[in-house]
Amino acid sequence: MKTLAFPLSDAALVAACRQGNAAAQEQLYQRFAPNMLALCLRYLRHEFDAEDVLARGFVKVFRGLHQFAGTGSLAGWVRRILVHECLSYLRRREMLTLSLEDCYTGHLATEQPSAEVELQAADLLRLVQGLPAGYRTVFNLCALEGYTHPEVATLLGISEGTSKSQLSKARALLQRQVTTMYSSLPISYSYAHVA
Image (tube, rainbow, N blue to C red; front, side, top):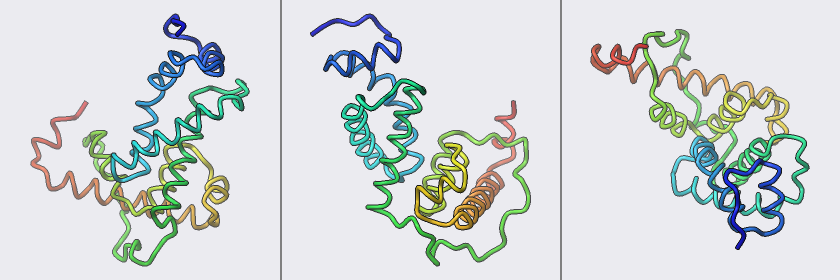
């Protein structure tokens, strides 16, 4: 096995991976896997599902490296593959359409949580994972991945209006949950994280 100078540029890494260099493949995986696992965890509720999708996604990355043209970033290309793999998993395992059970019949949140409250990343991840599948998927695609509503509609086979509605309802539900979570904490805790 050839040894590699670490770290390789994206172009050199792709070239070495295309030649079947195992050290380059390991380097590519190590470079992107932590962030891609975090991405998968935002779409999927369970860590073992996220790890499964991550593994399947990287198989597609390695098989598809010959298609990477190098015109965009390697990280963005890998991210797109993993997002599509998450969506495929959700289509197979969870309902992505809005069901009546997903609808909240109470009032939508109208107030923003206090600016003095700092939400921890683990808390936010848990709240996003707890959203119904349709809300969670549209929220991730729009709010976190930067897809537009027409792009989400095409990816998920839904209307733009449904995409907008699910994003709005996801945000409102998250706002209510954040407000509820922090209103139930002792005052000393909620102000302890002020920057």
